Length: 393
Image 1: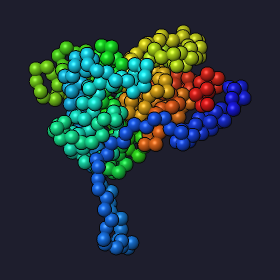
Image 2: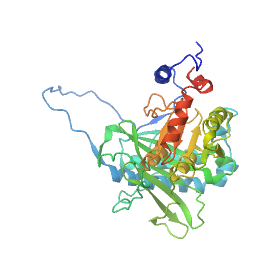
Image 3: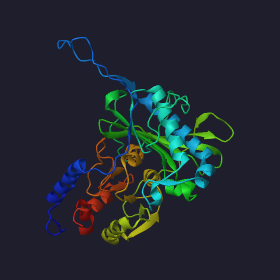
Image 4: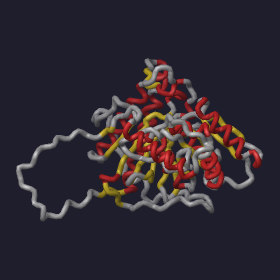
């Protein structure tokens, strides 16, 4: 059945958007591996005593977990930087023939082994979902020691005035409710093509289905003093940045770039990739914001890079196609939310983080702090746009 924009009410469109999520659960896109340490299950010879209360949930420190992920992102970034020449000049595989975005190099798989092995060395039963199929188990040969005290006494950069950074999650988290999403090398196409400033390592944490914190490693920082950097965030607290300089192996705090908040009347900066699949969305944005002087379009590579620019306020709105996955959006969504920005699908609904459907099939809209009204305007227009509605088919 073909639905037209004119025949659908806003309520019906939202119903279809939600229905499409349900349909995707039965017809999901190709699934990536869920990485969990192997365990052996044995039947107990002891009878079950139903009168005994259930075991209390295993709790882990929120800040210690984020600290280890910051350190893991630094290690992953160092791995990518060290293998840059070898990986880009060596054998490159493609998960999808003809799609440069699906390139896979030794840097991708090696960085994931380092990240996953190191995290599981601290939290052996932590649920981790990662992008690369080859790196599915902990490997002691790749394991690095991770510090859990990097946030002791840390001075967070809070959202700019007037922005809501969300509700702070509990300081103790139930292990069973934590899922870590890992993209060891976001921007592989940019990596292969030598546009290294776009490349990132993404480690995001979801708690009870919501992104609450994340670490974004920068293997090729533009700051000539630093060897690697990591930007991180925690909903309800804000964001921060740490780095390792070229002259020292110590992890130190380093300054963030200037943070901006969008104000009504300013030029609306819209970023997207160069994919033809987002052209109609950008054209729609240009149309609805014409009364504000139109838009200024930015072509930006890699999902994490796009959303980090939105977090900093360097971009007002970012429009992403339907090829991104949860490991692409979990970490940057946490950072953007911590600074008062928004991330939804094209119909204004939050992205769904579960292990059944890993792709963001209804595309992604992200808005900078202060740009909630503009976010609401674009998703409202998309709910009545024929081209946008076609993704529900």
